[in-house]
Length: 253
Image (cartoon, rainbow, N blue to C red; front, side, top):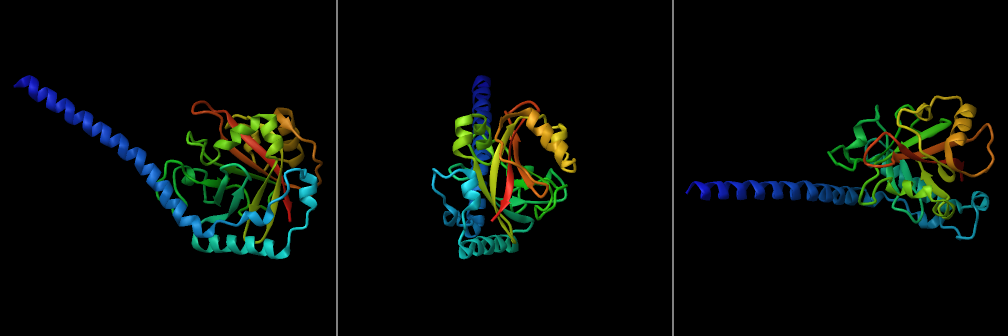
């Protein structure tokens, strides 16, 4: 009788642990699906900005985007910002999974594990460093996103350590309520999470010099005093303080 009770107790505990694990697993999956449906009506139509694969970044930058295409993207982003609190734009890197709204709050903790509607979500959201200007008018702009094992959020950033991948994915798009930017990627680096790289108030020349010194990949694209920059930062691995950062120049269309 005693052995039977022990067996039943063990079975119940095992079942509870299994169900608990499945609940946590599927809760995240369901949460992600709910958020995808929530933002679906506001996803900008980046197909209007598709460019030929044999065009280099300089040619892309000089391409004339139809006025109606630019207006459509701005209107879609304005609708996003009007309906999703704390959203300030949208980040897209063609032929990657990176295609998300950008969030902004008063710290760098809130959206680590929160969805765009503020509810708990393990994968969190893509968000701009709170010390940056919410309209991306500052010189240095840093976006954060998790490196998820399922490939979501900023997991694809780590792929840019391969020079071939970098060369074939060397641009992206950022839309805000008032502007459409092409992102001309020129650097892949792996700083520590406490590195001076994350001081968004740094002198821009010193910041660029330091970034160049520590970059595994660096493209000489030329800079001017008016240039602004954006970095996509994620964890290099599941452990440790290393970050993988993809940096580009913001080129307003």
